[in-house]
Amino acid sequence: MRLRLTPRDDSYFEMFADSANNLVIAARLLVELISDGADRDAIGEKMRACEHAGDERTHAIMRRLNESFVTPFDREDIYRLASCLDDVMDSMEAAVDLIGLYGLERLPKGIIDQIEVLERAAELTAEAMPRLRSMKDLTRYWIEINQLENQADQIYRRLLANLFSGEYDALTVLKLKDVIEELETAADAFEHVANTVESIAVKES
Amino acid sequence: MRLRLTPRDDSYFEMFADSANNLVIAARLLVELISDGADRDAIGEKMRACEHAGDERTHAIMRRLNESFVTPFDREDIYRLASCLDDVMDSMEAAVDLIGLYGLERLPKGIIDQIEVLERAAELTAEAMPRLRSMKDLTRYWIEINQLENQADQIYRRLLANLFSGEYDALTVLKLKDVIEELETAADAFEHVANTVESIAVKES
Amino acid sequence: MRLRLTPRDDSYFEMFADSANNLVIAARLLVELISDGADRDAIGEKMRACEHAGDERTHAIMRRLNESFVTPFDREDIYRLASCLDDVMDSMEAAVDLIGLYGLERLPKGIIDQIEVLERAAELTAEAMPRLRSMKDLTRYWIEINQLENQADQIYRRLLANLFSGEYDALTVLKLKDVIEELETAADAFEHVANTVESIAVKES
Image (cartoon, rainbow over all chains, first blue to last red; front, side, top):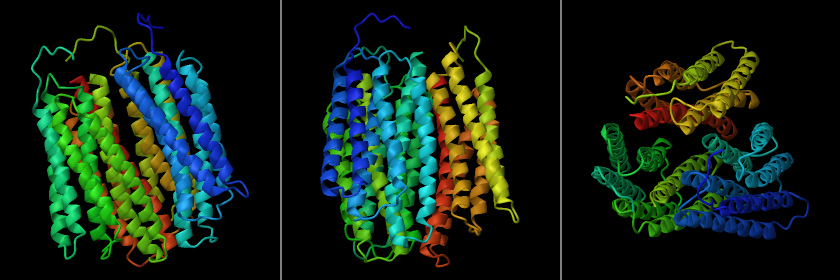
């Protein structure tokens, strides 16, 4: 471990944890959305509020970065990690927005598997963020996120194949495809967060 | 501000400004393209020339980078900024090419809003590039590009919803969707340029 | 050239060459897949094995990175190059998987041009990796990959236009579009590998 002669600004770790906790809330809104009798308008509104709160947090990290002399790790890595966390939120919000925009009453049943993977990935990410402080015990997090992403891939491809099973007309296929692609993008974005954490750990090691 | 003991190679700032000015020309070709009675073939040709000129500029930046001992900011950031500017051009050119390729006679009216946002983003970017020299007054640029990108998102989603309003058959939806997605990618790419500038400023601050 | 006071860990160059050679194998499986009378199930299986082997190599590079004190170039560049090589494999594997998943018996003839470009790009990449050691003679590689990517773009767009020529119904267009888009993503990913090599060379120059 490197000697640090200056006190580190630990508020970054709290801000990253905050951002990741916000992703847990968003993932749970997705779970709620696909439950029977869900009030989709209300959930859509909460999701937009969640995305707005995420933006606020991202900007707070950027502002802090502009004012800090000493940072716990490279400035550009802090920047990239904040951006990656933001990307996850954007995709989850976009999925909900598309469902409303397209007026999709009925979603394919398998979409619940996609969303449960996102919920788990959000929880793992939120648990890992505080460990950035010590850079310890992060290996397990990467491995689990990678496994989840592989699982998400499988689920996504199965859902894709089902879309073309003959149940849906071409326009409906197009709409549903947009939604499940956005959810797949969210799963990929969780992996980008984990990759960014991994590359930070590699540099600091 | 850091002391600089060596003279900086200021030609980079001019090359970035050149690249960004080229994006303004490209955005105005898009505006022309959707005007009544536009000569689409001629505009397509001009757009390809524009993209070619952009490639030349990008390569000039890369060549200069290979020959410079001192650079105004990190070599990899110069590299990334040049690539991001190039990405914007690629998407605008691809949109025009797809319109020709698909033989799309009639474009949805709302596409003009998408294109006007791109024109404004190009102008803001061209105005900001010379300010890289002093790294001053860039905050306003980021904020405005971010606002434009949010606006572009809204426009894009409204256009998407309109595609499915029943006016178009599935194959036409597919074609138009490719075009408006490419324009949305261009808007995102302008944000990547702004993010790159922001991350450079963060490192240099 | 910089003086190096410590022995460099040259195993990275071998691992990158290994990864790139694996891409050559994968590209040749794509060629095989579109040959008359191809055993698609067997090829799909081989492709998955190939992708798995690629993952193993990527992880070996990451593990080595965690254990190395001295690296031949910046740790984050090694990380990024490994990731980019992995991305190429993922897209090639995804294309094969989609063909199986969608039960696409007949593929458009022009797809062979796309795949031949990928094969050539894989070979060029595999030839270039050992030259990372000396950082010499890499310019030719970038130029050729860039030309191939331009060629791939042209082929891709021609294929796109053909999809809409009236030969296929909307659902079939959607399926085939996914496949040729994935192959186009693989061509782009080869360019990202070349760009990463270029940016490493720029930093080391």
